[in-house]
Length: 271
Image 1 (spheres, rainbow, N blue to C red):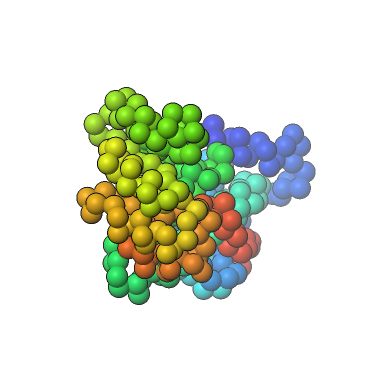
Image 2 (image 1 turned 90 degrees about the horizontal axis):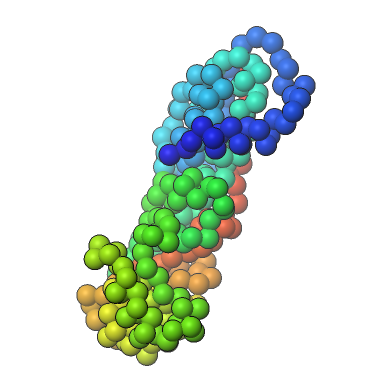
């Protein structure tokens, strides 16, 4: 949920101490318009900004809708100064979130015809922009993806640094003793042999990190069916179908959030 403090921080950052630029009298109507095709997200954030400024907002499309150039996304009516003060935040927030949703939708569509798996899911990672994780994670969902863990508390993930400090088996034993029964434990592995070791030591999920599809396939075959498998590490949209063909359950992609280009939008007044 967006807080008032967050919105005030965003506006304070953009407006500064003396806003002469937007000292415009009267009332006006503005429209947020797509100038390229994509999947829309971030509407809740933009709406919250305008409503904080006392501007009436009407979304014209829904979160997760695919739009074409020229499509009106939302309309805003109210005090002209307030509309102008909110427009750049609306464009930036919806543009960024829609870029994430659009890239996620591309990845989801890229594996739709991979019949060997059927259940492979596209997921995000914790490689999000500080302060914008909620918006970016919801954008992934709008694009048809899975959020993965939202915070460190949502899943115990044993990574290479934990293994370097404790060893694989000791790390799994240590964290299994400390976690709640409702929390799953995932282990990052670098070889199929490590995957087998992690499964035998009590991992719920095995993550194949920075491995090519052929090695991931070998690991998936060797891990018991009741253990979830995940592939991650530099996987691009162009390569995602090759990873889905390995039979892995989840493909997580940091690029969904950290490398998605913003969807191009325009905010136009009284058209």
